[in-house]
Image (cartoon, rainbow over all chains, first blue to last red; front, side):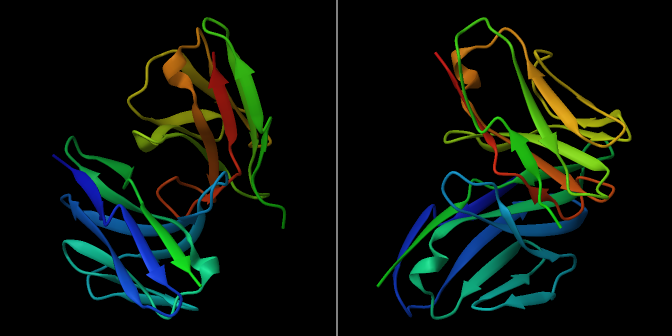
Length: 113
Length: 113
């Protein structure tokens, strides 16, 4: 079954303590992987798009990487304002020959001073 | 450039009623997608509209419908509301396809009593 799994479900970090969030997927024909950040009560905010294995993108303290089976969102020296839920979404050619976009359940990140 | 706007932001309805939600995409964006977000199921794709036509559809019952106007504004309608329809309904816009980078609105929080 085609699916997107994010781990951990929740992560608590101290300010400055770097870590990584994982998004693993089981699909055939990956066409793109998206990372979003969502604050409570708000819509997701676009962060990155990755298209092929080996690709990396950076924005401030965040760096996203992609392999053939998973993507990592690395957070370097996080600050309390990085606290949010991070969502990944996979766009792929799914069974039946059509394209589909599936979101993972997200990782809730809390960064404490 | 103004972002995606959704109205209303909050809504309380009772079972059996119907509801209409509105979404105005970013200027120049022609694709509008709708998602339902709940704590248990996460973000689930409802449907996508492009040039006033429904182009893609998720696995939701026919009680969920939508339309898009010539100015790309979109409405979503849910008829015969059920308790399980309580959720955050998110609208996202993109230039030509929901499989590209999407920009989300703040959402409409619907509570069905």
